Length: 249
Ligand code: UD1
Ligand code: MG
Image 1 (cartoon, rainbow, N blue to C red):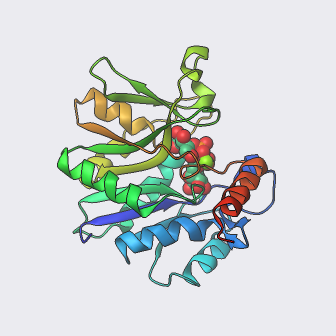
Image 2: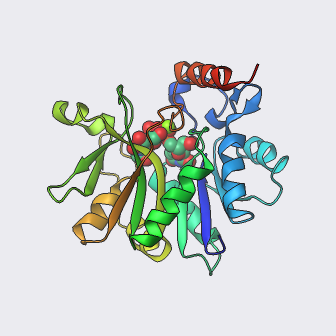
């Protein structure tokens, strides 16, 4: 995967965890959360992995570097949103990079096979953005995918900004994307914090691309454990139980 880099977003405090420790430092089965997705990323992209750090940056860097010494870091001083976190990582991308995978540090169980499926679809369909979507029974807390009459993803609406109707949508954004590098650089600079949380949402690049008529694709992941996003202590407990169930006797 010579022309593909991975950006992992891990700078957030994790306010919903209600803890003084940065979210990605919380452990699942005694292993810091950030090490899970970093492992998958390194297997895919080797040294072309950039982790965006901010909250407790030195500690996050230490737990990553200890196991993955080739991973590089970008610093997000203020946590202004997932889009802003990506903006902070862009200067770290090497010149040869054509495709950028964006992953979240709080989605630990993502499989390598899902990422290769995502990249294959992205390249084969010549998309500008390809994302991983999932239909789940309880979509609460996730961004919802809005599908246009041509059956393409045209927008992502966050839970906090969704109407009652939009909240009934079960097709969610897993926070995993593959984006054409040059288009990402242009689109991410166009995102404005015009939402209820006043954040620069990465998810807004979908609507920007859609309005330009750019190709947006989706691959589905049917395993709700694989795309589990950890935002609360309850989610963390769920992650523990997922690993318990998968553990061999
Ligand atoms: C995000 C997506 C949502 C998706 C969900 C999947 C946005 C706006 N929303 O929501 O559509 O369904 O993930 O799990 O992207 N982070 C930073 N810097 C920041 C803010 C966040 O690095 O300024 C990092 C966090 O540390 C975390 C990741 O980005 O690892 C996602 O942030 P989080 O606040 O958990 O977003 P969600 O609300 O889960
Ligand atoms: Mg999250």
